[in-house]
Image 1 (spheres, rainbow, N blue to C red):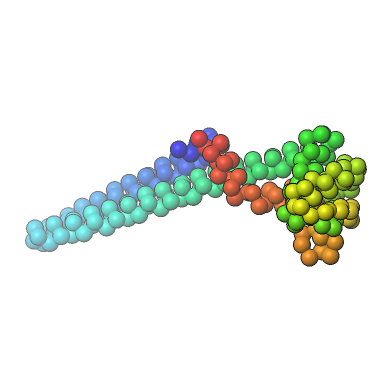
Image 2 (image 1 turned 180 degrees about the vertical axis):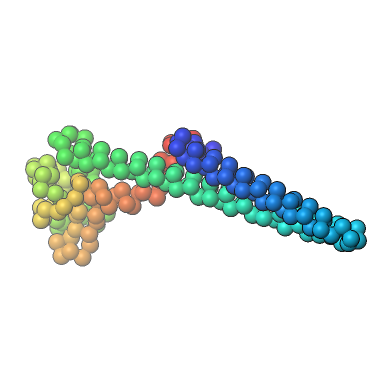
Length: 210
């Protein structure tokens, strides 16, 4: 069951309430119209009167159901839009938090940066590789190149040499590519969030809308 904010519930409730009032109004108008037709047709046969009444009631009921159905669809759409907005807001906050961590000297971020470089280099298969990071991250990994080369070499069974390339504009993370540029693995924070967003979305929804 989706839990909605008070504001969202109020909107949905208002839609359904307005639809109910509108539908009831149509039924009331149909009733009055039927009574008017019947009063004007006193001279008509009983069968004619009953047929007029039946047709009027059917028309009113069809319109009534149509209004309620439309209202339910609108409320569902607004509910989904509100839910989507909450999920997107959660991703925005997560991105802001990652940006804050990546802008600090936190050992957690340095370890994460080294990890994605190893993952990227291993995915490429080792060899002569170039690392691209933002300017402030250069100093974080400059002294770790030897250990990173060793890790990638061990995991790929291919001697690996890492060099620092040009600085890139990113929140954090790294791009690793072959020296000739033919193969590139983008493991920046933005790229990873984009790749994992679909699977993460269902997890976030599960946490937010239990």
